[in-house]
Image (tube, rainbow, N blue to C red; front, top):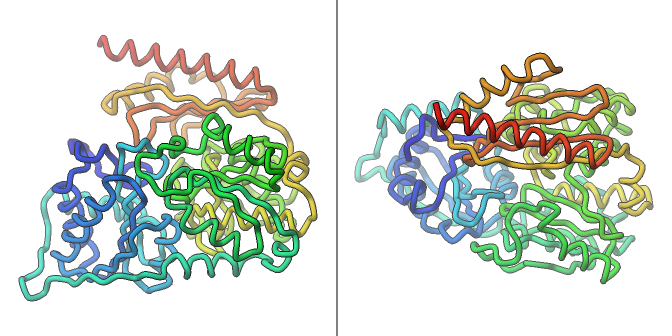
Length: 458
């Protein structure tokens, strides 16, 4: 893999058997095992077709450095993260590409607290990898491999501790779960049934080709879920991404809501109980989060995009709540990482305790419209494009904490940033009207494409 770095925004990612070959995964595992120094490491994977192949290569690499390896098979990423801390492991490795297309896979490395390694420790693994500082064990000190079969049961039990399960059970909610053929189907339906919900499932069979819909739960992929929620008169619909650390909700009217709105709902009720708390969120999040925080006495701390950054900032500031616009909510009393099942339990808890339907709860929040886009951009042009873009918009109200975010006087904004996992630029336009958001998105997609064309001919 010809990269200056191994790790992107969220772990190491690439196309299976092209960039992410077994040989590559083996050497990455040599580096990870050398970094941990013969520790206890737990390995999990999502349902991608290349997952078992890569997991076995990582297993071999870790044991060859003297690590004791514990495998838990197919699990959601947050379940693996909870298991790291629960079983007192020294670290964890999750084989997943999260929301990326089926041909991708990835390697995420967790610290002993279950949170992905901070950037400075990722850099140490990269140094070991690129300079081949592997420390392989002697023949009589090779690590052993064990299995842990009850990771999901332990995880589900932990989630339930943070909500009023009795109140939820009394409501007998009907919930439609669209796991998108991902590993979320192994945990979320079980959690909901144990809380007294009637659960209907969609795309529940784990299939690494993702035949039901793409693994990213975007509104344009969730029409079938929305239709079923209305048809069966469900109280709630929830769609997960490929490794179930994100959740997008559909209300009882069949309306699909971006992650900003569910995050704002959770933040509102969190701040009603704990005013003056600080909410951690990346610059890609909506103005809506800021509005809610200001109304209920909280503070916002903006970060760079990336779940690692949000998690590590939460730990550093001792904050209990973080969130992203993509449906990732971080609830530190459980664990300071994105967790689709925990998010769903929190939303149901709010519904049960207020006695309100989801559409009513979300209807009480300020309204913003968000449009998302992406423009393909070769990795080698990403930094040059950013420099050109900053120069082009320097006279506007600009924030460069991560990419370029332009704020306008009418409370609209556009964020333009390079993807850390794919060869493209992502754009997030937001405004008080849908048309304004669409106009912003189209304008700056055109700007980005023009800069790319210019760079290609230099």
